[in-house]
Length: 355
Image (cartoon, rainbow, N blue to C red; front, side, top):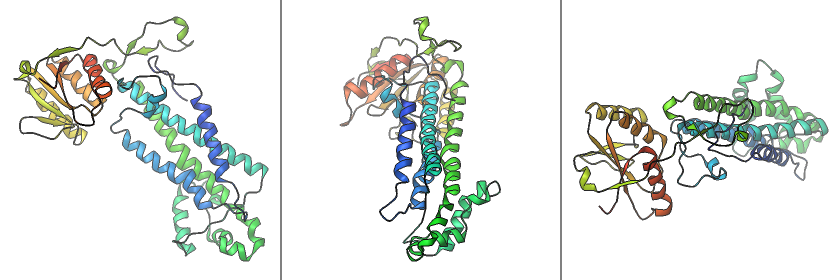
């Protein structure tokens, strides 16, 4: 089930019924008959299972380097606010739970229409003139449930009876084309709902297992804001004032570029594989530098990996400064304000670009 939200992130309650309603609308729209009484089973599978499965795979890649989820746009947070690692994982779990509600809406409409109407499916394809090739693909897609529900595996007989060209020639076969519904239902469960439930539970587990140093501190607020039976809410610590310094004070600092082109004198992070970057960062910390000067692209947003490395250096007593590099796409009120808030939160000195 969806996890309760940290006090510092307020998401509207209507996100759950809205996701359910949108799923129901998509399900109803996908099952609308055309003028000749056909429902293209292949198109329904693409909308209900194919595209959602691709989205789940992309979401798994996103988990390797989570950023700022779009869900923050309805959270009331300013553009320059950056979630910590715990909040990021919680927000990602909410996104996946929203998709689960969306898929549940599709399933509810499908079951309701199966009960109240007689759905007849067919198929046609310009690129697949041979039904034997399609049969092999469907056998492969049905492998997760082929031993549990054999009727949910389309066979060549069903393909032959439900092809649109064959239906036009033999209208009596229309009654036999409803055999597609078990396959579509199992595809919806296995390729749409199940991956998102797994991703949501994984993100929720990650948000709960973050080290104590990455968790936000309890926020002071009315007791009425704390739900009964729920642990005290968490909120981000109050950031320190911005400390502006000149570049001349950091001439002896070790220069680190974040997501910027490499130079001979700078360590570059944020552009290669995370494991390679972490190994390079650990080698830098082993040299015990007195100062680290972070050169960042002002038009990009701070991410959790960067704050983790800064926290490691801060625990070792290393002084750090942030030096933004602006370009034509940099918006001072948005991008620079985001980095300034990040510098205050991480207790970094701020180097003016004109210095």
